[in-house]
Image 1 (cartoon, rainbow over the protein chains, first blue to last red):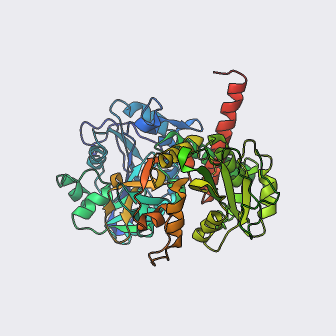
Image 2 (image 1 turned 180 degrees about the vertical axis):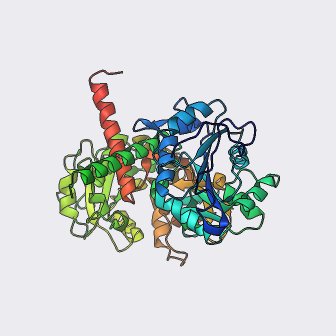
Image 3 (image 1 turned 90 degrees about the vertical axis):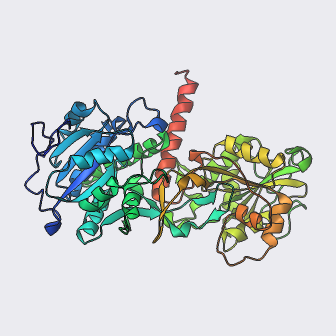
Amino acid sequence: MSTTHDAEPAVPSGAAGSVRPGPDATAGAGRRGGVACVLVAAGAGTRLAAGRPKAFVPAAGRPLLVHAAEGLAAAGAVDVLVVVVPAGAERATEELLAPVAGLPPATVVAGGASRQASVAAGLAALPDGTGVVLVHDAARALTPPAVVRRVVDAVAAGHGAVVPAVPVVDTLREVGGRVVDRARLRAVQTPQGFDVAALRRAHAVPADGEGATDDAGLVERTGVPVHVVDGDPEALKVTTPLDLLLVEALLARRGAARAAAAVGTP
Amino acid sequence: MSTTHDAEPAVPSGAAGSVRPGPDATAGAGRRGGVACVLVAAGAGTRLAAGRPKAFVPAAGRPLLVHAAEGLAAAGAVDVLVVVVPAGAERATEELLAPVAGLPPATVVAGGASRQASVAAGLAALPDGTGVVLVHDAARALTPPAVVRRVVDAVAAGHGAVVPAVPVVDTLREVGGRVVDRARLRAVQTPQGFDVAALRRAHAVPADGEGATDDAGLVERTGVPVHVVDGDPEALKVTTPLDLLLVEALLARRGAARAAAAVGTP
């Protein structure tokens, strides 16, 4: 229903917030255990140049993080939320999330120096009984709830690693090389979904020096195949001011659609 | 200044409109001859589902094609324009373009069954004395004039084929395969610029069955290296309703910026 701020033994010491597994925490994905989501909101947002961490940049008056949390709440498929934020922003985050209707029990923890370290901090804060874990970027603030449900359903159906993805519309060219056949490519979004044991194993493997990859890439290195489900163009990641402009426009359109529905306009 | 509708011998018979090379038609790129632009506006726009050819879909009340033409006019780097539209739309297009301030002398011709055929129709309508040809998608309606100038300048500097491109921000994954290293990739935009002889040679080579590619890809097959200059996120291609929403938002922002400048608001 809202974030909880009281002490709770299930949270590793050092976590700034706390988690209280809700009554559905072990029911969401049937026999696979509860569904948790690690919501990563620890990025600096340098390219956005908004003077604050990206997840806290407002769109239509509310931080991207709050929009992302609302989308997760609307999906109705997540039992527990772990929000990873820059160190020092924990309490402010709890206050931002408290009013979000329908939010699963949530805890807020401090992130690390890299995205991977931040996800690991989130994993460390998962409650016992978690069977499925989603890893979601708060910068994909307007991810439609249907995308969240598709990912959860695919993991619950037995896929150890699931990513939502969309076709590539741009013509791509290798630097100093040839045009790439975009028909063979998909642009990967979040939330990515995993069997929690598979993701924990993947994060325990030392990096192989091939550079950053996403969580699905980490899991894939351990031999778990990655299953792809349909993403959605509205699950775009806010990286540049142009992306933020599009998010604002989408929010305005959604607001207009809601208003029209409320007054019975066709 | 505006489109011209009178007969003109330099236009091959069969072209629907006509072209009158302006006084700068052979001066724009120095000793390389004039700069022409083939503006391709013949696509159906199926994914946009707007009930009309994509280039004629309005944004902020005016067709994408008109916005694209305004951008070319503002660049001040194009001497002659050839607009390729669906057969039957030639006269309507001339009327749409007539009021565009600063537009180079323009002709309008009917396109073919494929994008490549449409570009070929545009090439056939280029006036004598053309040294540099740009091929531009009307769906990249808000391409900043600076991008147009960068492409023209690079061709004038001796590069036989030039494309504007931007870094890839999405995580990409091969279908049934691995994560792709996006650092090695660029997303290619338009206008693409060419030595006119190189592009004509490339279009004369039969397709090799590798499927559709862009004009730079065609030229590359003939052994001409492709030079990359900086593109711009605002040169996005309108393909889906989401893209159109972003273009509308960009136009609103540009309008607000112009209004603020007009009244001296900081």
